[in-house]
Image (cartoon, rainbow, N blue to C red):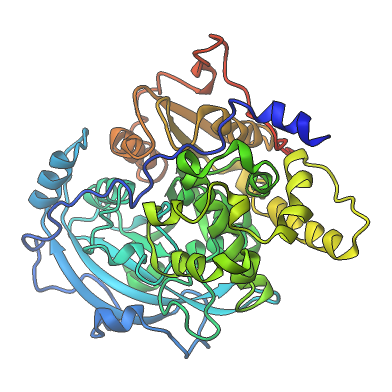
Amino acid sequence: MKRNQLVTLFIALPLLSLGCTSSDSKNNHADAGGTGADAGVSLIEIPCSDSAVDAYAAQTKLGGAKGSILKCAKDVDISQDVLNADATAAGYVGKSFVSGARAYRISYVTERATNPATPGFGSAVVYIPDAPAAAKTPIAVVAHGTGGQGTTCSPSQDAAGMEKGGEMYMVRPLVGMGIPVIVPDYAGFAGYGATGNPPSGYAFSADVGRSMLDAARALQKIVPSRISDQVVLVGHSQGGHTTLSALAMAETYAPELNIVAAVAYAPLWFSALSWGALLGLPDLFPMKNNSFAIAVAIWYHYSHAEILDGPGAGAALFAPDKRAALKDFVDNKCKVDDGFKSLGNTIADLVDPALIGAVGTSAAAGSPCDTTDPAAQAICEKWNARYKADRPHLKGKAATTPLLVLYGDSDTTIPAGRAMCGFDRLHADNANVSICVQTGADHTPLVYMTSSYVSEWIAARTLGGPEPAKCERDETTLKDPSTGKEFICATPPPNDKD
């Protein structure tokens, strides 16, 4: 396919709109304010006398089993009344919470998706309900959305409550109904920049999926006598991608985990070829109104190169005169700001022309690499393989696990045409998926508008609760206002469903 044909296909088909990410829509609400019902009584079954600083420091003794606890620090107690009041003030609509919680910060052993894989460590905040839903409860692992990749962007360090947008709304209804919850920072955030600790792989399925599954193993070690073997995976946006990635790899990476349900709010599940396609058609995505999508493409390529190609390989992808500024953006900025947008007019001003020339057209067309330059051919084949690997198929147990996907019909971050690509892929995998569309919901408000429904859906699959009322809308009700017809997957790049 020629470039002018690709341009025609891309017109009016936004990749990602500049919208609210987790860090862009931060809400500051009270997080502590009281103790649980059994204040002073330990709710966990491991030693916990480290400092919070210890939990986020670089860890070197990684010889234990995956999920082994390296550090544990006691954090705040959150009363039932505070959970309810805070959620109501934040816009939560749903059943009142029946439990308060104790919060802890931990670091745990995981594995990084280097080649070959190497031991790593992750940090997390853990919430243990003081009024558990049952004598033995399921556990939930909650994966965070986009909030930057650098040293100050560790999501769980934000006031012990995951106050960045959607996370608090996913966590609190679950712990408030009496389910223990762990919220991992993907490996690479804690001890950022330490030797042998590459940054977290943005939308790097094999890297973030490991962090999520090992977080489940860690929580099982914290309260072993009080939980069942049931595990629920939950995530929003980038965390929805992490959730689906973890689900896809669980049967091989963590076969002992009994994953009984998964929930993905507005998941980033369209083809990762999109990040290469941006390089091939830069003029269609000017910086001034596509800086979020461009930032994601930078985080994606930089983090993959650092993990798979070695230290310094990420910065080497940028144009020489932009390397220092863009490395500073990755290392130190947690959201897209005006300073980032001032670096160029399009992504072509930021990225090494060799990468653009090697992957841009092939990624946009979804076509095999075809160049007479051996160096460019090798670069193209390497990145095309990475793009493909970052939307793994749901097979085996993953395809049969109950999966709930939620999407807002007013989402300004992942437009409906791009969301449809993800829905189509899930259906092509014959996943056991229910898709629920929320009227009037944007990307982050979707979470607090539907989290009560999600809690009931989870309870029905884990605690014998009643099924929630059937969702009123599915993806077939999403209509393109310009045509009045049902949205279809926005291409290019093609949806690579096989």
